[in-house]
Length: 244
Image (cartoon, rainbow, N blue to C red):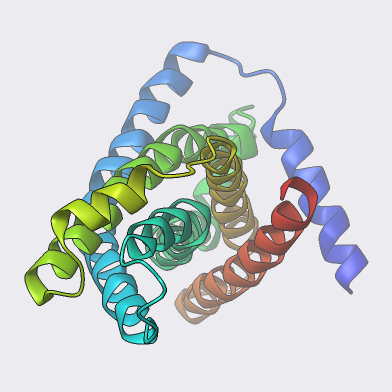
């Protein structure tokens, strides 16, 4: 069963990346998806990122019970955890719920209302036309969302730390700028690109092979979110094991 689904997924991706008939049509769809995925998700990502940074700062300060450990370590922990794990992974899981369910339900509805069959009768490569713009839109905008998330998470940590008295402004900035390893940002961007691909391709696969009616579209949407989250966590472990 797993190998059968994997085979169908690979064959669908092969059809998705086939040479497009007209790039002009695809270009318009790509910009539409970039707006929908990137701009449409900016608000939820911003809110989550600020609170993630704030919570990380408060909990780290609570665990620093020894006077021998400098308060500046709070800034270092918030920076590294935001870049390596919190911003890319939590953002991807949130986007799997928002973007993944939307992609699966859109394509699933088109399948059950026979719109995809109509596209194929017209000689259009339906997987490419429907799925490729979503993948390109996600792969280009989700890394940008992760960069914004990192900045807002660190800013949220700074505000929470200084407002609660857990750390001073100078200590936080000292920790933020001490012993920074630029490679961690590269790892974060690799995660963002791979997670973006997983969210859109898995969700599109679930929607494309929906069979039935409205109930099955809902089931495909739910399945897309669950499988995407599992795959994101698995990919997170693999990337960390390979790159760190």
